[in-house]
Length: 174
Image (spheres, rainbow, N blue to C red):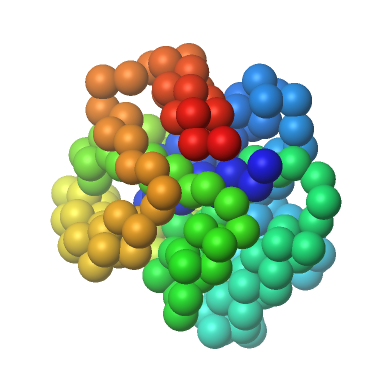
């Protein structure tokens, strides 16, 4: 099983991914963390010094690594992964994908000050600017996210309820 968790930055991909992997007894991989580890730099620094295109190429290379891996994996993608070239089509060829759908307001309320600082596109925005930016950016990304195998509205569900729902859906498709 390869399960890719997609959605906007701050929607809970890593948090839920870890819980899903533990419950499914498989390995969890956070794409952003793995790239930071391999590059020896933060995502913000990679964007600043090497550029977004370089970063997106690193993400795609990881997707291909996951395709070749024999292990069962739960993979938290970066928020922009689905929007680059044919990444969503490739992800869906490799395994299943789950889109964690939340509103800009819901995500903004989840983001800590540190969470804002570590995301290059959110730095320096006040609360109102953050929600406005995210609303517009999420609208641009929605068509890509919507290509996921499964789309889940997270608004009314706890993390535990989401984990149960996702595992039920994923196992039902196998």
